[in-house]
Every structure is written in structure tokens, then in C-alpha cells.
Length: 582
Image (cartoon, rainbow, N blue to C red; front, side, top):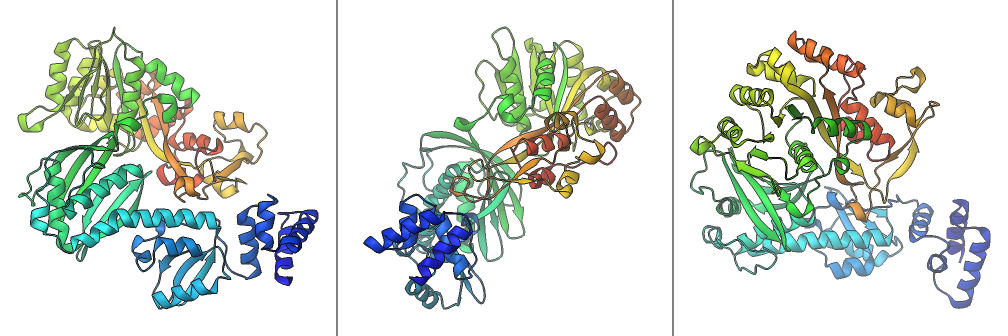
């Protein structure tokens, strides 16, 4: 009784319940028995997590409101059954050399803890978490193990050489019931990747095993480790699906796979390269049913959206999008094309490969094997009387010169270039060999972009920004160096409220859900043209653009942080502030 009263005192001291509610709970407990915590939760006086946290405080044990599911190796639960874990609401999360970390909802359940200590042969490091969070983690960990681990057991008796060559036809992999373990493993990996909304699958051979990792929201997570002896058959199976030469293991190869997962069409770009431990495979997934082709949803703010709307409706010129691989450049260009697509416009694209199918637009895929390159495709496209042309990427002088000539002869050209920021695009074109006066007269704008993870709206936690964070974002309230959009939000220089990522079951305990883009839109005006013609360095061009009101990547990121869309850590991770212009 004393112990239960102590729990009640802890709850009242933490202002989770009132003294009156505690007395009612104790009275109900005296009448019908049971645990005080369960009664308080049943009366809806507090949450289960409040009870568990108070219990952890009473026993001087660490409390965690969430369970880091992505950090749990599914192999660790091999000695347990899901039924036992759920019955006792206990889950091992990390196995060290000298201890086993476990999360429990009731640390007084000594029988379960003794069982785990005997089963693993290690002393326990106990962490207390809410039961709902633990049950959700149990479901996900055992589901992941069932999807991959069960197949791994079948591999022990499999014939690696035979299994890789079975099943040539593409069908919905959810409906496939093939007995070949290699095929089931590959299908399981693909199914799990689509289910978890992964953008890439990395299959990497090492000395003693093969690692399979998923990239979700821009961050890699290891999923399984396959035995080394099945490396060749796994690679062969995937290469067969991508119509590649399975006998060639010394040269890089590129292919494409089309699959269905639970009725959803998924396109996969496959790349293989030889490494010291064997072939490394990377698959980029494109779920056509989950495609966002709207400039507002992609992350354009009012100012940039207004400028972009005007630019994409210009009759001629070049609009360039720049950024690293996987930063969403093609998606942004497609969103722009969708915005202006109409029956009175002839829109053609040359891509490598064609990533989205857009109705009403003619799309071509380059094929270097038959000398069908971006340059030759663009040259042929101009004879088709186009109004708008999208060139997948400007990689060389020939393509750049044809794009410039196309813009100067009355065509609107969209394309991408690989540079770090918008101002560096002019330097890149000059390095290719394009004359500065041609660049100045043809380029309308350069758009640099990066992708940041959006903080989960279900578990994000508000807090007041620190001076260090304001400095990282390039915001100095005391000296008035807010960009205009930020100043409009906090005109009195108040300390803004930001949000931090926490983690919950809705976001897979990562604290983030989905991604958005941050942009740096440099619109070419007379001052910028004059600098480009003089072939000045990118720093001077960027400084002049900022003077004319351009928001840098860091500025746009800061606005999204203040809007509660993302976190300081995310923006700092993908963007950078240039001391030359701030």
C-alpha cells in the first residue's frame, strides 16, 4: 500500500493528477482492489506513460517515452517468441559485450527479467517505456524478422546456383508463392522497401556477409545481413530482373526493373559496380502511385512560388535546377511541366531514364549504345516544333550549346546541372566552354535545392530557440539580420519557438515523416547579366543576388524551421551559410 501511495505522490508532485483525483483512485482501489495506476488510467485521470514514468522514477531506472525501433537488430529477438514478448511486455533492444539492454513496462516483473538473463546469459540493463510503445516495437521487429529472417533460415538448405535463375516473369510479388529461397528473399526485401517507403536499396558485399540497407527520408538503415555464400546468387537474381548480363562481374552495369507490390506499380533503377568483395548493387525505387507533382506541396514558399510561376510561363529561355543526386531536381521540373501542360503547348522531354509518365507530353529516353544522347535527342527534338523542352541533364558542351541555341530561337528549356548552389551554375557552364555572353542572354533563372526531412506532426516537441541555433540558421535578432520573411514572422525580435524530433509509432521512432525541399532561386536580372558577361566568380554573383532579395538555401531552411516544418539539425545537415553573403 505504501508503494502505491508513493506512486500517487509522484504523480501529484509532477502535476499529472490532482490530490482529489488521487483520493478517488485510492478509494476505488480500496473498494475493488487492483493496481492504483490501472485505476487512474481507467478513470482517464492520466496516461499510461505517466504511470510508467512515475514507476521508473520510484525505482530510479531510466525512462524512455519511445522505443528506437530502427536501431534494433531483428537478430537480437531470435531466442524469443512474439507471444512471450507481448505477454510480458518486454523487448531486448541492444546486446553488448557485457550486458543486454531491455525495455519493459513493468520493471517489477522479475520472472520475465530472470528468464531473459538466463536465456541470453548476460546481466540486464533495464529501461522503462510505456507498454503501447513496447508492443508497437515488438510488432515491427518481429514483422521485420519474419519478412527476412525466416527466408534466411531457408537459405541454409538452398542451392545458390539454381535459385537465382528461376522465375523470369514479372508479377505482383505479393502474390508470388515461389519455393526458391533466393527469390523469396529478394521479393521480401523489395516488398519491405516499398512498405517502409524507402527510396533506395543498397546491397553491399563485405568479407564475411552481405549487408542490405534501406534509405528512408535520406538516411540509411541496415535491415538484414545475408550469409556470404549467397552473395553471387542474390546479385544474379536481381541482375536477371534488371535484364543485365549476369556473367559480367568486372564492369559497372545499369538496368531497370518493373514490379508490382500489392497492386502498386514500382519502377526501379538498378546500378551495379565491382568492389573488392564482389558486386555492389543499388536500386532506386520510384512508386508511381506516391508521386507529388505540385510546386506548393514540394515546398515552394509564396515568394519563390510567385517568381517560379512567372518564369515557367516565359516564351523562351533556360531554367536550370541544380543540386546533388537524389535532391528532387527532376520532380521539381516535372511539377513545373505539369503546371503549364495544356493542349495548346507542345512539350517534349529527353531523359535518362524516363521517371514519370506524364499524359500529353512526349517523352524520350536516351540510349548511348546506339548514340542516342542528350545532344542528339535535343537536336532531333527541335525539328518537332516544340514549345517547351526538358533535357534531363546538361553534361557536356555540345548539349549546353544546343540548349542555348534552342532558347535563343524561341524555345523554353528546362534542365539540370550538378553544382553546389545557384550562382555556381554560371561558372559550371563557362567551364564547359559556353561563352559568357550566351549564358547571360539565355539563362532566365537557376534554382538550387536540397531535401530536408519533415518533423513528425504527431510527436514534435516545442521549445524556445537558443542563441547557438539562431546563429546556425544565420538569424541574429539582436543585430536585425533576419531575412525579410523571417522578420515579418517576428517583427519585435522575439525569441522564436522551434520544434525538435522526438519519435513515435507514426514515424517509426525516427521523429521525422516525409521530406520537403528548400530552395535558392536566383532570377537573372540586368545586374546579374553584367556580372556573368564579365565572367566573375560565383561568390560575387551570389552576393549581388542576395542584395536583390534572393533567399539562400539556409534562409529558406530557416523559414521552414520557424514554420515548424523541420528542425535546425536537418537544415544544418543539408544546407550551408556562406560568410561572403551573410
